[in-house]
Length: 147
Image (cartoon, rainbow, N blue to C red):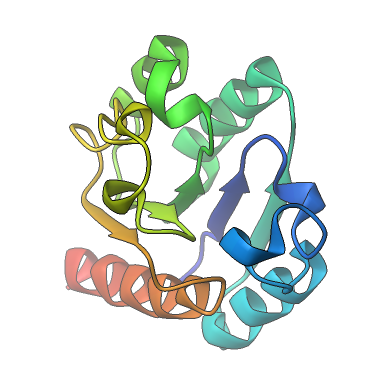
């Protein structure tokens, strides 16, 4: 794999480990990054988090040109950002939408993802350790596409 895998995280994920640990657990974003890098093996991982919709969109645009695959946890932007969805529509490579919690077991406002319609796959409810599973799946999807 010559191009990296991008792992992009949306708003409030910088507070992992502190924010509602009864819902999101005690794993920090730094620990999530370590999980992703370990799961990535020899793949280059670009790991980022932002609370800004504009920044997330700029990174998606960058990933369109510079990545082999995209793992995105858009957080709250999942449910209302048509701008993020429109940017993701342009993404030409395998893409996984990821959520730490099972959004379908939560309040109704979390049940309708704008991102799911454009993602290759969706993973939700496996907790922070699910990031590792998602990175491994993304590596497989990228390899299958290259074959």
